[in-house]
Structures are given as C-alpha cells and as structure tokens.
Length: 414
Image (cartoon, rainbow, N blue to C red):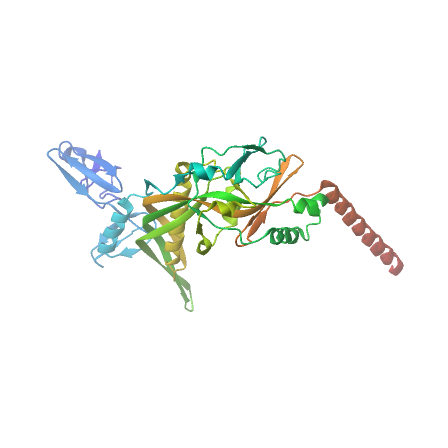
C-alpha cells in the first residue's frame, strides 16, 4: 500500500506524490515503525515512536483548500483558486482560526437594589388581577379600575409584600391627552378596524403604568474576525476581467455599558418593549414614592437573575453592530467568528413610563403601547370580518359595473 512519506496519507497505486501536501509516495513498509496520522484543528500531526513531528497544513482563507509554498514567488499559493498569500499573513490567519469563539458572561453579584422600609409600605397598596395574575403597585390613593395587562376590570387589593424598592424612575412626560391623540392618529385610515375600537369611551380607558426594568452595567471585551472582499473589473478587446482580493479583518477592543435595560415583566411583549425604546436617561431620577401618584406600577415577575441572559445578548448584539460599522470600504463584509466576554456586571432596578391599552376581541388580546416619555408607539390591530366582506362585495360590484359599461360600449361601436 502506498502512503505519503510526509503526512502518512493513504494513496492510490501509481501516484508519485501526495495531492494534499506534495510529499513523495512510498510503500507503507518503508515508513518508520509506529507512524500514524491524526487531524487536529486544521493541523496534521504525524506521530512516531519516541517523538512527535508536527506538520502544519494551512487552509486557504478564500476557498478553504490546502495552500502550499511556491518557491518561484516565495509566497503561499492555493492550487485550487490560485490565491497567493504572504507567509506571515497565513500564520496569523491560522492562529485566528484556532482562537476560541463564543465568549462568556460573568456577572458579579453586586446589586444596588434594596427592600422597602416598613414606613414606606404604609403609603403603598398592591392590586392583583385574578385573570392574568398581574400585580400592580400604587400609592394608597391610586385606584386601578382595569388591569392594564389584560383589560380585566376586577382588581383585588392587598398589602404590599415581597417587592424590592426601585433605584430609579423616569417620570411620565406625556399626559393622557397626548396618549389618546396618538392612539386616534394610529387608528386613522384603518377602515377594517372594528367600530368600538374608535369610540371615545374605549380610547379614554388607556392607562399609564410604570413597567419594571432591570438595568445592567458591564464591561465587554470583544474579538471579532471578518472576511471582506474588494473587486476590480476591466476589459480589453477580447475579454472581460475581474479580480477579487480577499481580506481577513480583525477587530479587538472593549466597550463599557451603563444601564442596559431589560424589562422584568412576562406580561409585556419583549418585541413591543424593545420597539418603544429608547428611554431618555437624561430624565432619570432617584426613585420616590411621589412619582406613583395617579399611576400604577407593575410588579416584576422576571427577576434580575433570569434577565441576565437577555442583557448579555443585547450587549453582544450591540458590540457586534458597532464593530462592523468600522469595517468599511469593501465590496462585501461577512462576520466569520465572534468572541464577546461580559464581566464586572452589576444591576439596578428602575420603573419606566408606558401608556397601555389592552382590548379583547374575538378571544384575542390586542395591545397598544406608547413610551410615556418619548411618544414612540407600537400596536397590533384586528380587522372586522363583516367590514372585510362588505368592502369585498363593494369592490366586486364596482368591477362588475365597469365591465358591464365596457361591454355595452364595445357593442355600440362594433
């Protein structure tokens, strides 16, 4: 049996050289005793009794084929795509391929969140919704007639227990009139919307609540590799040409993050809450009970520990986006690997202002949410089946009438 003298690969009879590394083909009996080949991380390892011979196999950054040293150009050359590379560049690229990817999130246990003092509890009340389980907190003068999370009108009051005190609050900037005006504008042009959605009594049932948010401070270290290309086109009398250069681009650095928000409510749709961001942190204040006057605050049902994963994902996504913005001037850019580590994390607790209206229609819950500080809004609206058929029949009737007139006109002229 023929084998490569260099890497030990089995070869077919009749070949003179190994098609992988260019080594000479020899009979297996001529190889040193105990010779065997293993592949590890893109590097071929040839093992011989009494020692190890490390034979490096370099992969082409362009096509992934095995590159070889070209003595005529003194460069590494890929026999598959004819790409050429400096030996130092290939060495660095090989190291990048071997580097670990993924990253880790290492939050510390540091937290500035504290419990309520007994004297403060006397000024607060808690209401629970028997329908969806939402728990609302307000001052003792606040009466929530309708659950803002599901629209249920039966709120059961009880003493406030088992709740941490917020560190911060962003007060409401937009009053109820601004919220109802925004909702009416949101409804404009929605012809298939059920009529009762547009009724003033329904619109005026919109409520302002403070939504619980966990705010994370952290430092992120990132090492990201990109594959980029630059393409040049030209032609002569006989042919059109194009040349593509490939680049391996490394971005390495760190970013500090302050108050990365993650809502602590299961009742609130995460996509909706992300859509009404950002909140203006220049208006953030240390929490005082007085800010709850006239509003309710939802009690968190997702604690800080469970929210850490989402905070880590938001940090990772942000740092990857920012790093990619710095890679410019190329025809194409593709991320090949990313290693983002988050450390030195700490957490605080805040309440952010939201106007919300929930409507139950045909056993489905439709929600309108507006940022109570910036006015950014999002919502999902139903369509009235009867109105839908009405417009379909009207459209069909109009088309039928037009076709009838066209046919009659053709008869006259023919």
